[in-house]
Length: 124
Ligand SMILES: [Zn+2]
Image (cartoon, rainbow, N blue to C red):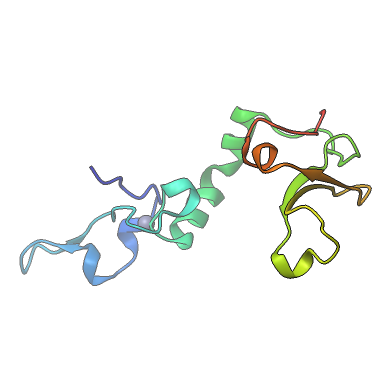
């Protein structure tokens, strides 16, 4: 079952794939989302996504919870897993490592730690 584009004006864009009906009774209909699926696979194009956002984004954010205080990247929450390519491993360095975006510290990882989605050095 294909999903309909949620763009409020999707049917108002005049393209041949939106046209339905016989001569004298032609109309344009809302598209299916299709293979691209913009905006979390809810819109057929970025234009339809932007149309929806202009009309609804404030209400959606208020419903979910608006950010009221700035977030901060600190040494405790900025570890990211990285992979070294062969040409980057010149001193016997490990293939996988954690990099701290805040402090620039690197810590080596085993393959198992790298593949484990639950393994993290981030503490908040
Ligand atoms: Zn659309």
